[in-house]
Length: 163
Image (cartoon, rainbow, N blue to C red; front, side, top):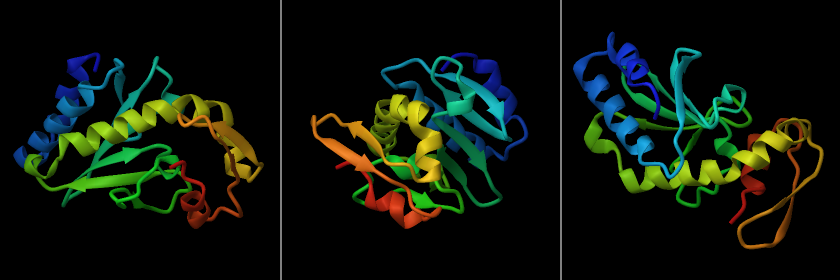
């Protein structure tokens, strides 16, 4: 992560438990193979690649009861164990933590890697995916997969995850 001042600004108003959880998440995210930019956007500590906050990768948000790691296009990420929780958005998915001890660095790191892998696809196709236009993606297994999102359905995103 670039710019430690952003982290300091974000955790300044948090209670000690939430601040420690945020700091631990940032440590895990910082272990990413790619350097990510960080900024406070939409009341979240938000991470992007190459300063592209329009297509942000993930963000850390806080509530009264949890610290959430939110993936911008988490609905497109492979999640066979159901670690990501869907919300009201077509794309957003999150993982919630109550303490630093709740964070499994392997799981978080794996999702960061998946999101980085899918980022070019999402950047190039997010409008088409959102409107339901079929989009081909050549995944790491070199198989072509047809992706279509139907009628703003969260279920349809689950149907089209790449395994």
